[in-house]
Amino acid sequence: MLMAIGALALSKTTNYTPGSVFCGAGVAVLLCAALISKRGDRFQTGWRIGGIGMLSFCMGGVFGPAFVSSRVANSMATCRLNLKQLCTAVQIYLNDSDDHFPPAGKWFTAAQRYGPSNLTCPNASSPYSYAMNDALSSFSSLNIAEPNHTILLFEMNTQGPNAHGSEQDVDNRHGKGSFYGLTDASAKFGRSAKESKLRWKP
Image 1 (cartoon, rainbow, N blue to C red):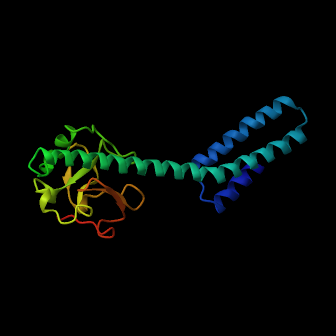
Image 2: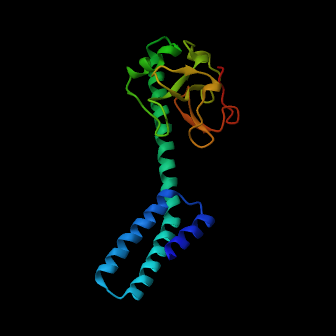
Image 3: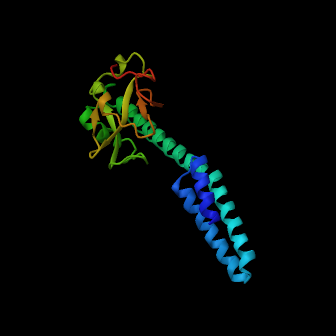
C-alpha cells in the first residue's frame, strides 16, 4: 500500500519513466522477500517492506532520469561520430575524383570504399540513417563558399544506403532536432538548418 502511494506521489512530482518505476519496484520486491524469509513478525516486517519500497521508489525517481539522460547523450554522440566518419570518407573520395562530390545516388557506395560500413543512428527506425544533400551531387568542392556551414549529409529514415534528398526529408529523431554532416567533415546539431545557419545550397 505504501509503495503504491509512493509511486503515485512520485509520478505527480517528478519527470518519471516507466523503467525507473519498475526498477524501483523490482528492488523493493527482492528486498522484501529477503526480510520475510528471515523474520516471522508480520507487523515489523510490514513496516520494513513499506519503508524499503518507498526508499526504492525514491531512488528510482532520483537516478532513473539520470540513466535516461545518459542513454540520450550516448545515442547523440554515436550519431555525430557516424556523420563525421562518413563525411571524412567523402572528403578522401574528393582526392580521387578531381575534387567533385559523388553523384547523390551513389554517395554511400563511394564513401564505403574509404572505410565506414553501414553506420546507423541508434534512434533510427529504418535500416539506414543518412542521406546526401542533392545540391552537392557531382558538385565541385572548390566552389563551396562556406565548407563549415554547407550540408553534405543529413539524417533521414531510408531503406537503401544511397539515399539523397533535401530539407523536407530531414528526420528530427533527436527530440526536436537532428545532426547535419558538413563539407568540412564536421557535424552539427540543430532544430533546423535555417536556425543553425546552415546552407543546403553551396
